[in-house]
Image (cartoon, rainbow, N blue to C red; front, side, top):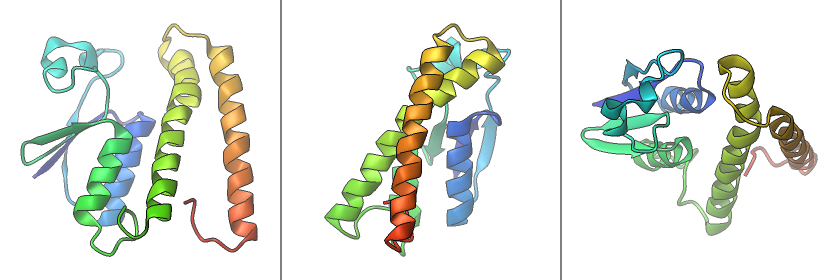
Length: 155
């Protein structure tokens, strides 16, 4: 059984819900009151994830945190055709890992600015927005070249 510790407005949690849907994997949701309750900072939640972050996935007692790690785990575990995961070629694997790391950068920039604006987190929102725009330019250029060269995917 899979349980996703989830907050509906979290972009990182959304990534996991989307991947579970793509893979056709059933799961249950355990709602975490991220805001305004700050449940993710509670001792009870820190027992699940000491980093006090979402998402967290529990698959039959195997608990994994971090959106990119969870995406990798889900693809490796449930994607038998190799459409979403690693193992098809070293170059593709490296490309996937590179863009998963890039997604983490987006979380630290655009996601951080959103946390500031929507949930009043204390941070330098202007710097986060500036970094987010830089990253989106990189992503846009990459996608343009991928389309131009008739590559059907990000990695």
